[in-house]
Image (cartoon, rainbow over all chains, first blue to last red; front, side, top):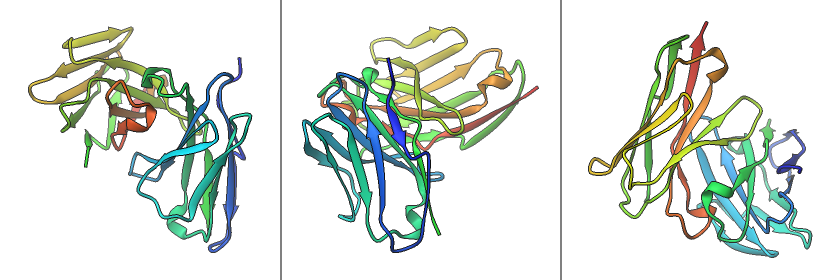
Length: 114
Length: 114
């Protein structure tokens, strides 16, 4: 069975541009979580989607947004890119309100803003 | 704000040594304490987890020690191997409310020298 897959693996953008990152959850999982992993800061919670709805967001500005499609895959959009947005963006999937022990991460998208 | 403080930031040990990574938490409502292992270019993977009703849990060469009164927990890697070189994250959450409730430490980069 396929795990959580993310694309692209690497993305290089110029400051001010928009970036779109994609995530496909494990089959049967309806919840997708997005995290930002910046150097030295651990994993910071960005967004949680379930059944196509945004359920919660972390302490990030509105230029970080996303959506979830009927097949439960998800997109993270980052508008007006800033240099400090350079980070590894991870998504994880789980059942709705499933236990943390049964959430799984993808390999991440490395976003570099120049 | 709920926090999980992790130390050290980086650690170098020789093969066969026992690296120890420490974490401290504040929220007494946390009841699930996982550790994640992340190799370069990969997403974090659940390594081992403990609940506060036990003081120690072992899985292979990995051991979690838990001190509920001190609100601290630690990861010990017995007979460490170069293949254990990775970044390790501790985390804490309640087992309800979904994965969005998981709070991560800032990570420890471990290097095991042959």
